Length: 428
Image 1 (cartoon, helix red, strand yellow):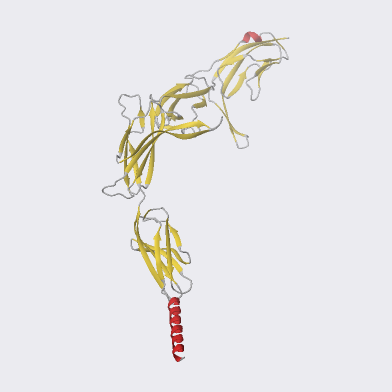
Image 2 (image 1 turned 60 degrees about the vertical axis):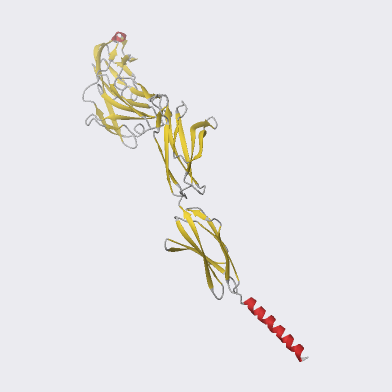
């Protein structure tokens, strides 16, 4: 019986010791993984870790060291994974620290982070006259830095050319699309010469650069093709009269559509180009300069510019000379038998269209002229019988008004622009 009790006690002691050993198993990090064996700057990586043993809740802390600097990714939590995005290239040591109630342990793993491929593209020309016998096409040269390469495996290059087009979405809306017209598959050649079709327009070349890990970066650049040189044609009235509305219209041909226009003027004192105003002196789709000839015998020196889509510019000077005299005439045969007390509209003709001030000199006892405000109409008002000469004068008339439209200053030209004398005969 004693022997049986001894065996039982021994068995219970063994069980007790086994249970004690299980509960006291050491904390151990069983895995630390990164979802990729290498990474790239600004590309997300996933780190995962797992631990066993220990006592109580296990918490994980993730951090890394690069170039001697330590950065925490995520502080202690129960999370067994975390995402992080490296911001610079280098050899990263990834750490996970796991702690329970009694201790903390750490495990690390190295990973190489590469910089993003940075390609640069240069073109032998960005403006090509395709029908020229000297045209050899556009030579495309590419250089690249960053990424991952080896002595055996360097960069590879792919060239894609698009024609930039506008298509109608509906009757009022257009959108720009890139239509692929050529593709040269990946090769180790960092130069390529492309000869575009004989079609004027905008083209886009995209070069994709691939490293040894098949990581790709792309860069694009536009070039332009014309069939004929950019030209401008100009229509305008070269010798307007005082007060005439002058319209200068510029139209483009050749080059690459769409065109933009601007107008400048020459300063009389300095001889330099100066702005007309913001509506005309910045490039826009407005090809029509409008102004009023305000100075008799004056000269306007205008410079027109037209620019095509490829940035080609044609500059043309324009000189406009305002006529140095104004025509004014009255046919007085119509006014030889007017009756007293009548009001007759004066029949006159003139090429003076500017804002004007009109006045007359006559024997007012017989008749006088009536000038209607804001109108070009003039009337003869007869007062008494008799014959008189009337002299009609035209002068400049300018008004300076305040913000409410009230006249604060009126100016007359120092000399009359035009005058004419005619005879009126008033009878009973």
